[in-house]
Amino acid sequence: MYEHLLLETKGQIAILKINNPKSLNALNIATMTELNECLTNIEANKDIRVVILTGEGSKAFVAGADIAEMAKLTAAEGRTMSLLGKTTFRRIETMPQVVIAAVNGYALGGGCELAMSCDIRVAADSAVFAQPECGLGIIPGFGGTQRLARLVGKGRAKELIFTCDRIDAQEAYRIGLVNKVVPQAELMDACMTMAEKLLSKSSYAISMAKACIETGMDTDLSSGLDLEATSIALTFSTHDKAEGMAAFLERRPANLTDF
Ligand code: CO8
Image (cartoon, rainbow, N blue to C red; front, top):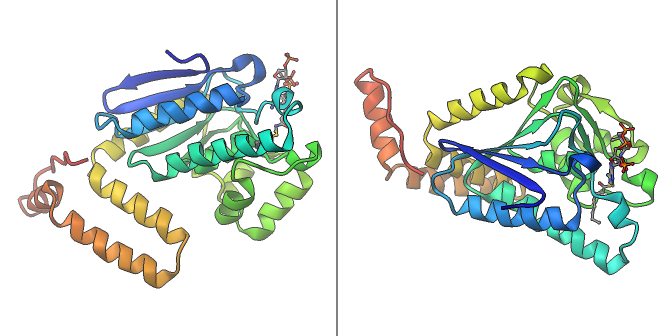
């Protein structure tokens, strides 16, 4: 169905792979277009509650935007591609499903930026992260100047972007760029375990919490707290609120089904 993506579903979990292994899963315009289309379809699919995003092969998550293609782009075309990235990566942050990045190797440039737009990052111990753009005469253009500073702080973001230094998975964990590090061979199992844990919670509540966190990061505290108050009121009207609290009081497992 897709030329540059592999999509597999296991129950309510979608496993989405960037599939350009010959270029270490580099993101060209065709891949970005397919990724945007695929995420749009997943966003509307209520049968999918968690997405695991990874790269095909054992070497790379995504080694960046496609340099061979970018080398030929004009300024206007570069801006168009950056805006395609903005739309696509922003969709990951605003869709109701949880998106877990399974970082299975190089996450460089646009690859690091793609991982940063995911809700949770699980890295193989072999993963390598960097924003090498300044060494190519450009700057991060899929959100790196914005999301890296938000995730690891302004000082560390500036150092990584200015120096183009590569960091390993443990260092990425130490600075808060990834949530956890696991042996390469256990990466997909670790992500599936996390996805299954999320499926045992209320997907509707998780989607509301995600929206509050995402919007709250871009607004002042008082507005964020107002949004939270309105959002929790919405959760009070759900089946999952009634079932979750009844199950606690009756000392039985909850059957949470809202999405
Ligand atoms: N783009 C295109 N091709 C790539 C890329 C890439 N980003 N990365 C790797 N490849 C290709 C190589 O050219 C090579 O192709 P071939 O076999 O045809 O020669 C193949 O993948 C294998 O790569 P290597 O032989 O280089 O493998 P190594 O194991 O020696 O090295 C590295 C692996 C370290 C990952 C190395 O390939 C590398 O440094 N790649 C480039 C990493 C990089 O600089 N990424 C950042 C790109 S800039 C970016 O992402 C900007 C994002 C914002 C764009 C905004 C819109 C304009």
